Image 1: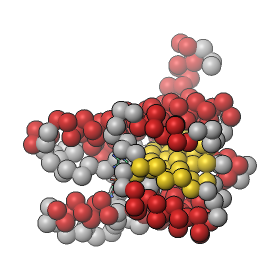
Image 2 (image 1 turned 180 degrees about the vertical axis):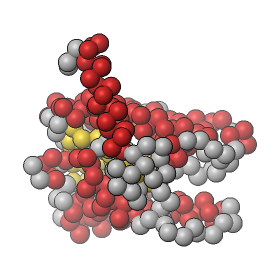
Image 3 (image 1 turned 90 degrees about the vertical axis):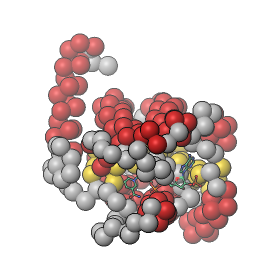
Length: 267
Ligand SMILES: NC(=O)c1ccc[n+]([C@@H]2O[C@H](COP(=O)([O-])OP(=O)(O)OC[C@H]3O[C@@H](n4cnc5c(N)ncnc54)[C@H](OP(=O)(O)O)[C@@H]3O)[C@@H](O)[C@H]2O)c1
């Protein structure tokens, strides 16, 4: 199957209006797949949708939806209707606060939990279920190296990314035999408007060696069939900044699958 047969005819990019999400949208549309673009701000989203229609000739739906809201999935499904979604990219997930846990209001943290965990789980259940029925599709979660351990200024962020990492590995294990690809792509520091504005707000300079969103999108889509984990900047047999390599993680999951089969049967 080529890319659009496997992951089309529609893709959802959650957090699409700028940076990494925007780059994914351009590349996915370049494969002839229609795009549902989601972000909160209407104007940049509408402009991107028009650019993509002009550039690739695909259909584009721009949805202004807050992914922190408990009804985010209901709003997405209402707008998507009967369109067949073969690819769900969960991109929105950065922490705009950069603060110690107790120095920021709990409601702010809970919004991040809702977006990075609640909406991710709901959307994966809904769209993953439809993909399983069709026997094809892809779930791509944009993660961060912060998934491999916590530290100051990262409490809810690293915790939610660790959740997404383990969640993706489990989904990969369950859905791969059903034709649905799952990838958690752990990024390093990437040149996005969100990162630039956080650094500017804190009076910090841009660090050297930033990844480009377009390179991230290109590698993310290329690695989607080779989940469950990819780390930015390293091959799958190299641990890099992680405690173990994606290959070692994959081997562990496959070993656990074998023992699970003995307990739960082969289903
Ligand atoms: N940039 C980095 O250095 C870096 C490093 C490691 C990992 N990552 C990961 O890469 C992904 C993208 O990061 P980013 O730096 O581009 O920032 P981001 O804030 O995660 O993503 C920006 C995009 O998401 C949308 N968005 C953010 N919150 C949203 C919400 N509540 N509802 C709907 N849309 C929302 C933004 O549009 P609106 O503002 O209009 O909603 C924008 O289109 C994240 O998952 C992040 O964890 C980034």
